[in-house]
Image (tube, rainbow over all chains, first blue to last red; front, side, top):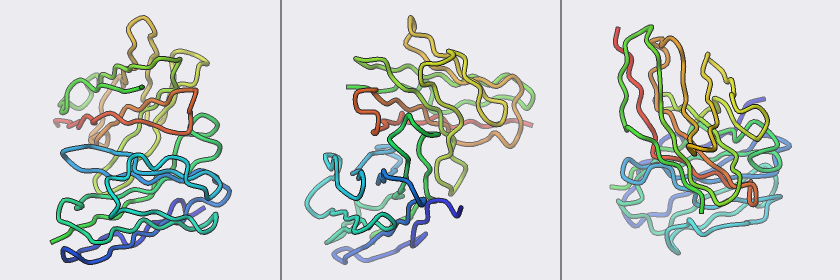
Length: 116
Length: 114
């Protein structure tokens, strides 16, 4: 199994541009999570999906952020327009049946976003 | 709401010494508890989890953690540190009522002195 695959690994963009981060979860996993990691705020849960349906998006910072999961094998996190304060490492993670029924979450390697 | 507090943002030990990383949790219902490790430029990897079976949980790489309800703690230990243990460690909690969401602590960076 290739694990959770995120792309790109690094993204540098100018303020105001649209940014799209991509995630392919592990096949068979029915939960998908998007986290953001910064030095100041640590790991923050942005949104999570169950069977492709968004369950909790209360962590999405503002309307500039949106996430979709059109099918079981693909999800995107979009920022439009991007701002320097969005610079962070964005992680995608997937799981079977929530946090307790399997060995926790499997994380991707992350996308390091820099907005200049 | 559940939360975890990790005591000490940075811990430094000598190679071969005991590793102790502290975590206290807050939860209104019996929690699930986790420790994750993050190596530089990598995602988080599960070390171990507590889900109400044995209170002493053994994980990968020789780490273990003990759930102590009376102290609301879930400290991570390893008897003998190795240079390869240098990483960031995160304690995490999930309430059983909504077990599909994990809340992470702020992390503890572990350094190993030769």
